[in-house]
Structures are given as C-alpha cells and as structure tokens.
Image (cartoon, rainbow, N blue to C red; front, side, top):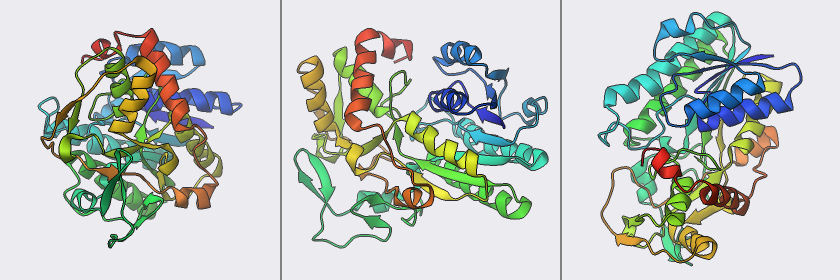
Amino acid sequence: MKILISGVCGFAGSHLARYLMEAHEGISIVGIDNLARSGSETNRISLKRFGVQLFHGDIRMASDLETLPITDWVIDAAAQPSVLAGRDGKTSTRQLLEHNLIGTINLLEYCRASRAGLILLSTSRVYSIPTLTQLPLRAESSAFTLDQGRPWPAGLTMAGVGESFSTEAPISLYGATKLASERLAQEYAAGFQVPVWINRCGVLAGAGQFGTAEQGIFSYWLHAHATRRVLKYLGFGGQGFQVRDALHPRDLARIVDFQLRNGGPGQLLNVSGGQANSISLAQLTAWCDQRFGPHQPVEDGSERPYDVPWLILDSGKALAATAWKPHIALHQILEEIADHAVTHPDWLAWCGL
C-alpha cells in the first residue's frame, strides 16, 4: 500500500507517518509539506530516517502535485489549524481559504485522477458556535458541566456533541473552510466513487506539539505554566471553567490505520478524547500547580471571537463503526507534555511565541 500524507512534517502528519510505518509491513509513505511552520525541519529529518519519501511542495499549488507518484490513499493533514485564522492578523482570509479549502480541492483532484481514497482530518469546530455558547451548563468542581435539568439541543448527549449537532453558521472562518472541505469530499465520493473517510478531530495534544493558545491549548498551557509565562482565563467570567477534551495523535493514527485497512466507502466520524479525557482550564492549572509549583493565571473576562465554554465530542459512532476508542488517558498525555516542557524550557520561544 502506498500512502500520500499532506502536511507530513506537522504534528499530526508526522505522528501518522511514524505510526503507519511501524504498524504496516510493506507500506510506502510519500509526504508533501511546504515546511513553513516551526519544527517542520526537525520532523523532516526524523521522517526521512523512517523511510518516508519527502517532497517539498505546497498543496495550494496544483502543479506541485503533478510530480507526485500515484498512491492508493491520501491523508489530508495539511491545514491552517487556528480557529482565529483569518481574524488574528497573522493569517489573511485568503491564506486561510487557500490552505484549508483550495488545498483540499487539489488533493481531491489528485484522488480522482489517481483513483485513490481520501482520509480528511477535519475538526470539532464545524459545530455551530451560537448553539455551543447556549448549551445548558452549570459550574461544578471548577468546570462547566451539562445541566440535565434544562432542555438540550439536538445532537447532544451526556457523552458529548454528536455528528448530528448543528453546523449552522457562524462556525468561524476556519470551521467554514473545514466544513466546506467535508462537503466537497462527500461530493467527490458520490460523483467519482472516491472512498472518503472524514474524521472530525477533537483537540490534539502531545509532546512536541507546536501549539498556541488558539490551537494546541494543552501543550501551550503546560509549557507556559512551567516557564512562568503570563496565563489568562479569557471570557466566561474569567474563572477558567471552560472545558475541552484531549486526543493523542497516536490514538488518531489507530483509527486512520483501521480506515486504510478496511477501505471505502467510508463514513463521517467524531474522533476525540471524550468525557474521560476532558478537563477545564482551572483544573488543568491545578494539575500544573502540582507538577511545576503554583502559578496563578490572570482573571480576564474579555471575550474572544469563536470561543466556546464547553466542547466535548461524542465518538460513539466511531466506536460502533470501527470498535475504536482512545487508549491514551488524559494523565498520560499531560505527563508526556510536562516531561517535554521540563526538558525544553525554550519551546514556546522556538515556536515563535
């Protein structure tokens, strides 16, 4: 089996490549990356040692795909991953659209021509922000939790947000590019019989992630706490009660491996850490206080666009369809990042933060 991974030198892409090379005999992996992000060069060197065939190119440029060999599957792990992209002054709206939508279109055309299947890494941020901000929540143990005494929107269960939850706008410019990519991938599946799996991923987290507060929040928070950088509880009363769940990229790689082995036609699935791997910022700070010593964040109630108070994905459909569930527990993820923070005290500076 020959696989093309876009964004192969990124956090998700590099983990996927290493896992698949270890899990499969006779597998061949081709990777393409524009090497624009910090850390890409480091991953490039290690992936080359693993035997990954690397191409320096940009999926926004259709011509950069013309020299790639024909493969059996494409894993689209290339993206501008910040929910604030297009509004943060760091990435223009056009850059965001080109990265997350035009790039996917070019890969779909590659799949159509090569008769290859596609595994699209999407995001939990395709779900409706107004519906998420109006969830019935109450504060308990320094975290927001679902209030069973009030009405719930469709698609929400005690396990979290399911695939049928509203995707009505606004969902952020970032979320809109990923939702549009999902729809196009489904159309290619129907129109050209391209096998397509779509994985709506929760927050990826692990050691070596070049995260920021807008994307790799777990990595960012631990590294910032360990080095005594200023941390802020933004919005929602400034108490840090907002909740997310964490997913290790090797757990993501396990379901991708299943999808590659089982082929098409594929499904759309939530793939996330779930309730067992969820934590609030306040609870995360308490964990960091125990690990690194006390460091109190600043209480700042100012609101940021696109922030939500609670977002845990229900991956029950993935469990039913593939028998997948995360194996790497939250405490293991946090310990892995903490060890990395101790041995790499200059990590955030190296990330350009």
